[in-house]
Every structure is written in C-alpha cells, then in structure tokens.
Length: 438
Image (tube, rainbow, N blue to C red; front, side, top):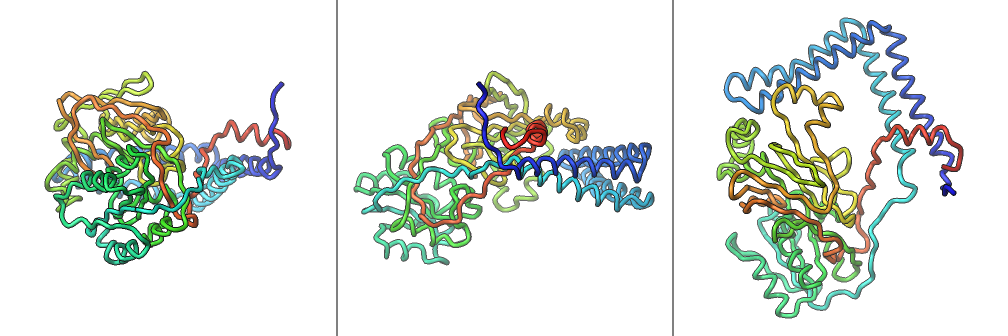
C-alpha cells in the first residue's frame, strides 16, 4: 500500500504556473523570432558565453598583455551579443524571456518548498554559572572595543580573557579555564579561533558561545545569530537555549565551517597575501591553476577518485544547492554529513564547456558524505581551515562528528533563512499532474 501525503492545492497550482510560464517563455521566442531566428539567438548567446568563459580562464592563467587581452574579451563578449540582439530588435524578447523564466523558477521553487521549515531542536538548559569568554580585540576591525563586549560580558557574570597579542596560545587558555571550573566557553573573534575553542568545549562536553565579532562571521550566520550587533549574542548567558550541532574533523583538528585545498589554500599560504590579497592572487593563480606550481591533489570520496582537481572544499554540512562554493549559507548544521566540492578545469575548452550540463558535470564533483580523503604528491599540503592557513601531512582525512558540540544561543535571534529547494522538474511535473493528495 502506497502512503499518500496531503499536499495543499496551492502547491499544485504553483507547479502548473511554473510550467505555463516556462512554456510561455519558449513560445514567445519561437513566435517573435521564428524557428530560424530562435536557433540563431541560442547560437549567438551560447557562443558568446563560451568565449567569455574561455577568456576568463586565460585571464586567470596568464600574465602580462595576454591576461589583459583576455580580460577585455570577457567584458566585450556579452556586449557584442547584446549589440547583435539589439540590431535584430530582439532585446525586448530577451528581457521578456528572462522575466517569464524567472517567474517559472520562482513558482517552481515555491511549489517544492517544504511545508514547514526544518529548524534545529532547542534544548532548555540552565544558564551557566561560570562562563569563560575569550575575546580578540583585533578581530572584525575592533568590534570587541566598539561594542564594549568585554565590559558587557563581565556585567553578566562572565570571566573575560582579552588576547593581548598574536602569540597567545588560545587552546592553552581555554584548557586552563576548564581546569579552573568554567562551565561554558565562548569566543568573540574569527571563525578560526571559534573552531579551536569549540573543539575543546566539545572534548569536555561543555556548551559553547559564539559572539559574532569576526569579519565575515560565517559560523554565526549559519547559527542564525545577529552579525550586525555582536552584543546581542551575550543574551544567551541569561536567556538562552542550546543546540546540538556537528563538527568537522580534519586530521586531529576541528573545523566549524570548511577546509579548502588547492588554489585558495596555496594562495593564502603566501607571505605576501596579507598585505596585497588581489595582487598576490593574480600573480599566483597561473601556476596554481595550471599545475605548474604547487601540489597535485587526489580526492577519494564514496568510492570515487578525482585526480588533479584545482580546488577541493570540504564543509561541515553542505552549502545550499546554489552556493556549493561556500560563499553563503548552510541551512543545517546538524545533518551529520560533510559537503564535498571538487573543481577540475583542464584548460580553456573545459572552461567554455561549463555552459553545458555535461561540461559542468565533468568539471565539478559534488558529494554529501561522512568521510573524505585528500592526498597529494608531496609529504605536506597547504589547507585553509576556517580561514586559517596551515600545512598538514598527507593523506588528509576529513570526517564528521554528528551532534558533537553544544552551542548556547540567545532564545530570540534572527534565525537561519530557509534553503531554497533545488528545482526538480520531474517532481514539479508529478505535482502539476496530480490532485490534492500526492
């Protein structure tokens, strides 16, 4: 007997609307431009995109005059396509097609969105009696001082240790606090420091407090904390709840966000990177991307081996489907899986092929798994762990520790935005063709 689930009728109508608007977009192009014109439109757009992607690869992998010629092509390719469309009086068709297709995608995603947001379970626990907070006054451009975090925390009964230099052993400070009887550890600083102390808190079964005083605050974002005013994170000391979240493990080191191998890790390893990020990146990219300099990686995940990827990103829980590169959000931190992304682009032809689904599938490997191993042709490999550049012995094993960390967060906080569902046209078709029960 097949179990049926009640689906609101609005979802069926949204699915039908997605197909109607998608069909209208295609029919508009066919009706206005005709079959020959439509094929020409697609051909011009496709060639322009492929040339732009190939030129972008040349810009990244060359220096001097050739780099800047390629950069000019990257800019000019879409402009030439736009001029050709304008001369054929088809700009309005492209705009209308874009609007209709966007409406189809929006309707489809709304139809496939979960009925209820999957929020993490909150646990009621008593407030800490001896909280111990470590604060980095240099992090985030001086947010500790700007928001008076140390004094506010002390007024709430916390013991505060303010780092007075880069040579401080933060792990030793945190371990001493545990020996002295701290019943909560917390950090106001960057994600690298957060990860270090979070690992110690998990080791001793203590709750951990995140104060969003870093620069990007990716960990705080995915916990649903206020990144604009870090002082609100201190509310958790008096009126908070606990979450149980996963931790990533790379070797014997904990990470809360991600570990990156390849291009990014090799670049941030350079001593010149801190003083000139853009210049150093552009100077090192040619050798890093073409394999003339640096390590040659190999990724083993779920029985699949990826040889020679230029970049590998392993995250504590996967990023959203439209943000696998780790630049945005993870909708959950308690899914018990690693997110794995590997990018392998061998040359300009592979870069141009990224416009096709087949090309993207060949160049980009995405997996959700419990364990992954990254090896290299050198004894050690540079790794960016939560933004901190370190050298690790190969092979490097990454794993997930489900529910390893107790995190204390304010009861009232902005929360995490629900993830946009992946647009699955097969599911949409079933939804559009069925009635209320699915």
